[in-house]
Amino acid sequence: MEKEMICIMCPRGCTLHVSPSLHVTGNFCPRGKTYAIEEMTHPVRILTTTVKTNHALHPRLPVKTSAGIPKDMIGPAMSQVNHITIKGPIHIGDVIIKDIYPGVNVIATASL
Ligand code: SF4
Image: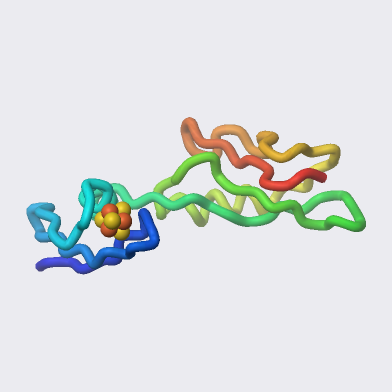
């Protein structure tokens, strides 16, 4: 059965149609085809969240993964993130959790 999805790779938001044999239509550019096939075969997401700190004024620090991780790894990754408390000083871009998924780190998106 054909699947319909919105391409999120740019603001144009093309409506993509993907056949069971992974034939993609509706994409204005090649990135849409790549996105649709990855979404069907190996969907990944960037995890954006916060971690607990020991700093009274800034009790949470925003973090994100350095690349997309498989959608079914988001829950386990959140579980790891929720079990740590970090101490400052932290600089934007510092690695907070190394290899939360092979080759992907959780990094700070703000300083503490
Ligand atoms: S298919 Fe290309 S133009 Fe369309 S939303 Fe995706 S990236 Fe943008």
